[in-house]
Image (cartoon, rainbow, N blue to C red; front, side, top):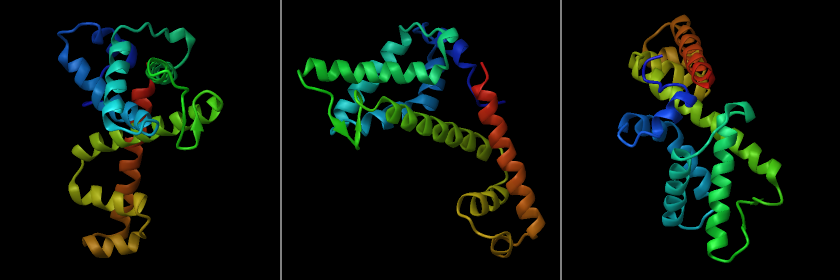
Length: 187
C-alpha cells in the first residue's frame, strides 16, 4: 500500500539508525498525533505535553519492544504512561486525575481510551492516504454520506451524480480505508 510505512517492527528497527530520517518521519506522522493527544489531555500545559512526547520518542528509539509480549500500540501506551509517571515523580507529585481518568487507579479506563484513540488515528491516517489517491468529487460523495450522514439522494443532487455513483463511491472508498488499516496492523 503506497504511502504507508514499513510494518511497525521493521520501522522500529529503522528508528535506531539516527540517519534514517524517513523512518522518523513515517513514525511521527502516524503516531505523533496519537501520542501528543493522549498526553495533552493529562497535562495542563502544551510545553509539558511536548516535553513528554519527546521523551516518549526517545524511549521508543532506545526501546526494546518484544513482539511476543503483545501488540506494539499497547507497548507504546506503557512507554507513555511511564514517561508521565517520571514527570510527576520529578516534580514530587502524585499523578493527578485529568479528564476524569486516574492513571494509577483506573488502568482499564485508560487502556480503553488509548484503544479508541489508536483506532481513530489509524482511520484518520488511512483516510488521508486514500483521499490523496481518490477523485475529489468521489471523496466528497463518500465524506458526505459516510461521515456527515447525508442521504445518497441529497449528495447526488448536490454533486450532480447519480445515487448509484454516490453509494458506489462510498462503498469503494470505505473498503479501501478498511484495507489500509488492516494492512498497517499486520506485522
